Length: 336
View: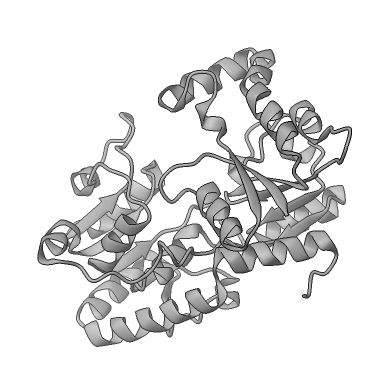
């Protein structure tokens, strides 16, 4: 199939995983990176402020994408951006030959719906990782929403044997990879007694926390993420507070990299992994404060759990499998 994928392309990005997985599956893919917008990646916040103040400017950002998509003549437009203005999406779909099926796959929590264009743009299919969001869209608005969890990409997310130098760089007791915000920094302040290496872009200036001394100051993705996760005794995954009935990308990344993971308990975790056998879940801070020293002192038990999670992730939770499910839903064969 001819599929146009809309989403920012950078190391290990959601859109990049999708593009590569679709090409692995034999599809012809056009990648549209909107982050090259009017001012470029480095001035994204300024660009967003301009769009908020002068919405008419937003149409200029999409002019090039509209031309590229129309020239490509896709059968499906798959966007990982859910905040495309309705008029822009309508224009992207407009074609004298064949109107493409417009599909969005939202990888974020519901608090990130920004201007709420996702409710009114002319999407044909909407895929979300969270049961709550799917039910809300279906029951409140009768929109064509479906559950599609996130995944790992085994070509990047796999076990890595670290050299002595890499062990020096990545080795630690606790790690995670993600953005810094107040909830996350406050959470990790409770574990300052451990050797921690926290990976992610440099924190914003408004973040003030003693835990920032553990910040490594750079984003890790693909092979380097695998090294960072394999170098730690524990990948500590504190999910965003708006994860209601879904799980985040890091759940699949950490297991896909063969790392031992402790993660927030979720009512749907057993749909993906067996707690206690393929990863470990915690329900509150007191429980987590007991789990960390317990598992730090049991490397063999950690290794067995990590291996079980690794096999499960690569067997059942890959981007190729998720995209096959999506295409089956679109084709009218959701159970195939």
